[in-house]
Length: 129
Image 1: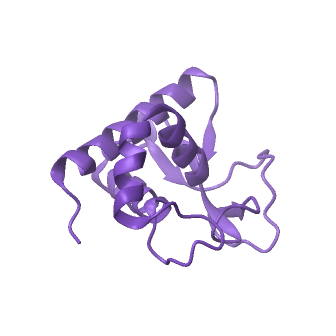
Image 2 (image 1 turned 180 degrees about the vertical axis):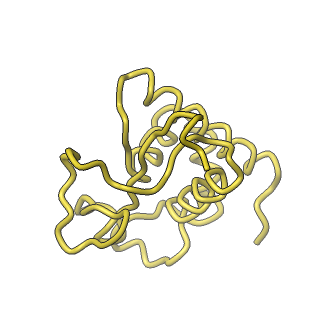
Image 3 (image 1 turned 90 degrees about the horizontal axis):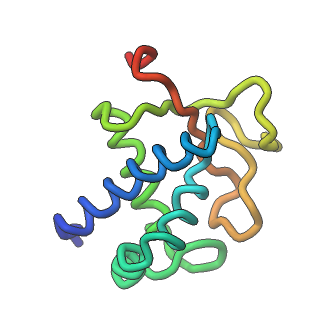
């Protein structure tokens, strides 16, 4: 099922808005779950459109592809295009628990559909590759 252009644009703009909002709070890193929660709370129309396509998502939802998956893939796409100034990784002083997660992943909450969730670092434009 293809994602309608207006939903795709809505999710992309929501992610860009989240990064700016998160920076304005003085935060330097976040997880994909933080973005999902932002969209759920502040972009409820976009969230409901995603849920109508793939269901709610999260632990025990019975689906491999959910709104969480779509948002995670959209973050990856925006990073690769240079549309948002973030990179996958973990800061040395980060408070997230790694547990059994490798690479740029940290332990997810019990409600997340996966034991690990991707971690992102906000970078300055000058550090962009």
